[in-house]
Image (cartoon, rainbow, N blue to C red; front, side, top):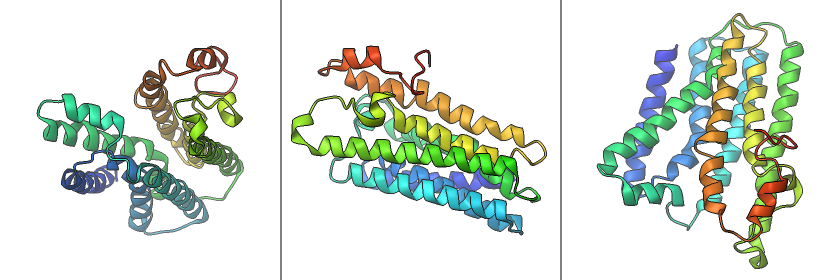
Length: 252
């Protein structure tokens, strides 16, 4: 089942890569990120040959999360050209096309495979009755999804005001964490992993929230954005008094 899902993701990300080269904009990979998880969810449930309540719930949650995220990123990036991170790589990388394919699109494909582990694991497993772990998963997912949506909404509204140009948002959820949207996304995948806990060897799927959390906190999320924020008005004071990732937790 891993090989099947891997092949689907490879073909999907290869197609996204071709579109990106035609548009000369590698940041469209971010738009298609969420849709990739939806593809995995529906491919695996169809291939499993059976549908139960748990599989349906997980697929609906992935659909809700993926469509919302892809639409948000598309609207945010519309008319702005290539994102600053991808543009920096375009300006500095040798063998740009090959490195883009491997280090952006195939690498994102690998992360889609790993992070979607609970989705295809659940869909390819024999079902069982809904229980405690499923309810806990729905609660955690709900908190994470609400946090991510509200953080993005607050940031969007903040940026709409010309007075805030060049300033740092320090209100709402952003007063509790410097990256509440990323924290919410980690909770989303922790919640989805909970749906696998009642299945044999379901604890393997905890690799999903672990990887997405480490990725956002130490690789592609927090470090890149905080480097961009350096030198902005109020950044030093905001950084000194506000948790980085988990609200109220200063050491992570």
